Length: 146
Image (cartoon, rainbow, N blue to C red):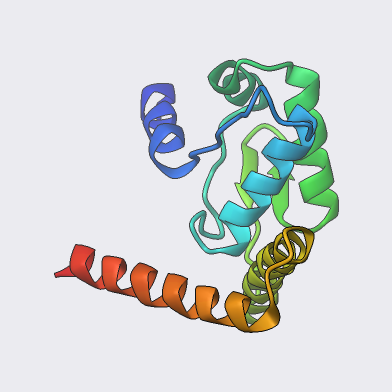
């Protein structure tokens, strides 16, 4: 695959967004989003990732930052590097993907409950609010797919 095509794949399949105002370090933002893209199945096993330099240029960050992200995700078994060929997404088992998806939603719900507790929303109000959000979001998704 020529470099021009690889850049196109990166733009389409790796929508990493950096929040300059976040308290989360840049490295962590990239790592968490790339991990999510892999474990959600958005990036399929065997897919060639951009070189460290290309990805750093795309994200406008340090090559060292991207190298660290790639190394950590390789240590976690999510990436594979082949000398002279590049870095590829590792094949992830369905059970691991399911565990990640469930954990991501559980973490978000825990944050929502923490926020409700901080602002003194009752359990009943929170449950009703959750039902309202579920209903609204599911209807919006159905409308988009029609």
